[in-house]
Image (cartoon, rainbow, N blue to C red; front, side, top):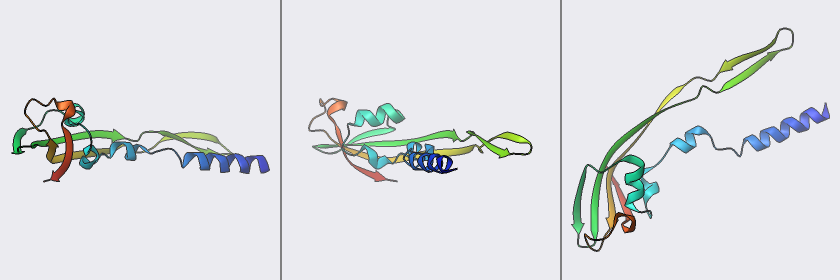
Length: 124
């Protein structure tokens, strides 16, 4: 009995350290601040519009939406009189919308995308 309690306590302790699927899917537009604009383009596709804000800053207008279905993991219930039954967690549709103006520093038009760093995000 003591071994069972210790095993369950260890499993609960380790399970709390694992990030959930919701945490990995939830991506904020502000997560790109300090990264090159090329990372944003690679993750979500090309911008809708690009324009120069000032001599040292360029604005990129993005509107993108990503949908994922999470869930469906199996879990088991045990009835010691009958046996174990396999069930599935419900499946949920999660939509992540990232739209706004990404302001990147670019001293000249010849600056490559990998060197244009996002300094601010203005949400719509």
